[in-house]
Length: 194
Length: 242
Ligand SMILES: [Zn+2]
Ligand SMILES: [Zn+2]
Image (cartoon, rainbow over all chains, first blue to last red; front, side, top):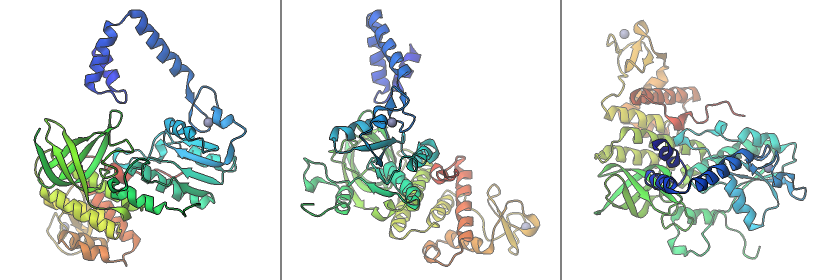
């Protein structure tokens, strides 16, 4: 029982208290229901893997985005996690391909470039004819460090490196924006009517 | 829960649950404090990006049993220049990491707060690779384990000092050398730093890269020896690049 609580507590978003609550709930539930859940987890884990090219979640060797002939291979969007691909796809604004780093550089945790899919990113540039790399990383210290590191690595290779224009959240009031966000929004400004 | 105010520097943050973070601060009056910032990972959070590592902030916190809760944050000064420079950012994070290791929770240590603020401010106004080792050496001095750099740690001789030994805690003459070799130039910088003349050291742009590297490397190994732990932020880009 303690082993179960410990395992549950390691899941993202689950603290020790919720782990205990979930464990008690499962123990009280119907045996068949629990079996259904464990089978579903095992099946999903067994069939889903990372795309061999972009490291997005995929059920096949290459994901559906990498095999879609209509997508522009000259623009590559670099993200931290698969869920960022989902978010960007929802905008319907991007028609290029993705590269998932599976994390970000985190100096304080000792996560360096060698722990991420950086080498794999470099190896894609030439064969796929990539001309622009868009860095779509989280607007925090880890994302910034990762972006600066990648820009330094990519620019000498002759690819255009761009970054998301980090701006103000739509629906928010200017006066409530913090100084850093406001500064970034100023940096990423563009001509009106462009 | 009682509400209190303090100023501090964010040392690190941890994700908590779906949208919260635990923020570790070194504060002026309460030492190291860990507090939950609720909803901070949502783009509409009122905290915005004010609670990133290296941020110098004024905070209003609810005192909790183990963790406090962040109620309000205001930025005291911005670190925009640092955040646009990879070396400055990693050095600034290494400064935070070291202070985090030295500080104790809820035990007032205003000197840690003051020294970190000073170093980060200088880092932001003009980058120098010597700022990190300078802070490390001054912190060791404050801890009472600053290295002896003006005479041999074995014979107290002041001539021909050619090596420095992290374990022995200082320099050695040619006759008693056991540690790593150190150049007279690098030794002079260590002396200046420990005498409190950091600004003049940092402003000196004529130093050869080798000398700077010697000082950086000594500051780091002396601090790592004291902490009995590697400084992660400094080891980040050591692996061979692709
Ligand atoms: Zn793919
Ligand atoms: Zn001697």
